[in-house]
Image 1 (cartoon, helix red, strand yellow):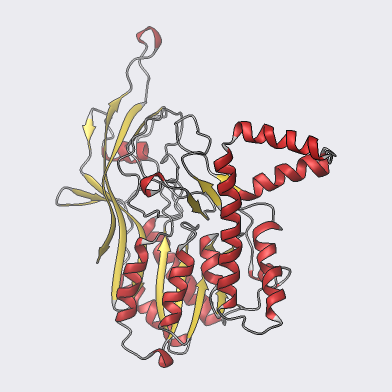
Image 2 (image 1 turned 30 degrees about the horizontal axis):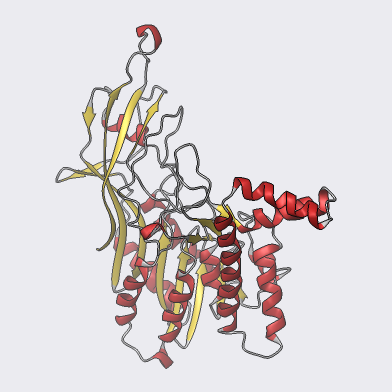
Amino acid sequence: MMTQAAGLAAKNRVRRAGLGAFESGRASAGGQQQSTYPAVGSLGLRDFRYSFFRSCSSSKNNLTTSRGRTNLSIIVPKADRIKLIKQLQELRGGTTVISYITSTRQGLEIPMAMDSIRKFYDHIKLIGKPRDHTKIDLFLHSNGGDGTVPWRLVTLLREHASRFAVLVPYKAYSAATLTALGADSIVMHPIGMLGPTDPTVANPFNPRDPNNQPIGISVEDVSAYIALVREDAGINHEDQVVEAFKVLADKIHPLALGNVKRSLSQSRMMATKLLALHMTKPEDEHKIKEIVEKLTSKLFYHGHPINRSEAKQPIGLPTIEDPPTEVEDVMWKLYLDYEAEIKMEEPFDAAMEFIALNPTKISFTTPLITAILGFIESIGRTDVYSLDYMLSGGPLPPGPGGVPMAGGVNVGMAVRRKGWTKE
């Protein structure tokens, strides 16, 4: 089972020109097969080193230091968020709002993961009302993650609430979309987006990238290859199709292809079970099958954004709700607070941060830096997922013939801690 703490021991060295970013990958405990539902990718954060070849002398980061620690986040007062959560609860008729925010910041994404479930239980315990008098709104923003999280999270929340809704201010892709499927209503902001639920599979048998990390295989890519052979290339004789499949199997381990099939079946089963939690009429069975088919196979591209109009038709979700203007406004204000805290609109660039802290570009090691990457928050409790790291480096060594590399720095990054803490 993947957690956000997986992959700490892995080490990778990367040299590239231009912007630096975390090397993406999917890690699983014990080297087991891992199915994820990411729009961009679940990241195993690693130590890495790369070179930065641009001259940079300034940064717009707000840098604060405390006890030898540097915080690169924009500090948003917690009281402001709690006030907005209370306001949203009132506008929604006395619901309990719990925010689940995972970073979608380019280069510093984190996935939905099983280690969040324990935190949710702590928030549920604070509600203090019987189930029949409890309505829970999950304020959700995520690019996806572990494909088993939606079922565990939804069933936990529904067990403690007579009505369960998911509020989508902006992005709820992949595993986040699956989570929304289990809700009695999906309240979508005008800019809110869902996504397809076809999984991406990564395990030790997958092909490797140049950095020796497993490449995720989209289940629909495999299906599309067979469709390409049959429909576009016009190869329909069974022996020829078998030969085309052998070509694929030469590139991708047969066990990896087997995992693709198993993951597709799991995705369909998960979506079906989540929808069946509230679509309980006999005539709903056919509707559920149609919705699942569209979300897993009929959109063709895993990054396809589904707005609320498309979610209603042609996807056919009966639970989509357009909120009143007042609710829309508060949803967006609350999301913007989280966006600012995590700096989701600013791509992560370790070299830029290093130069901002060390404009002379001498050999240098930064204080411990903290980046905020996630929230689980309600009016009674705040859990924060953060990453502590240090940057070290200095000028690039001379190039060919001893020519200095003007303006360049060689930066290394070491992750010291990452995980959930109670604020």
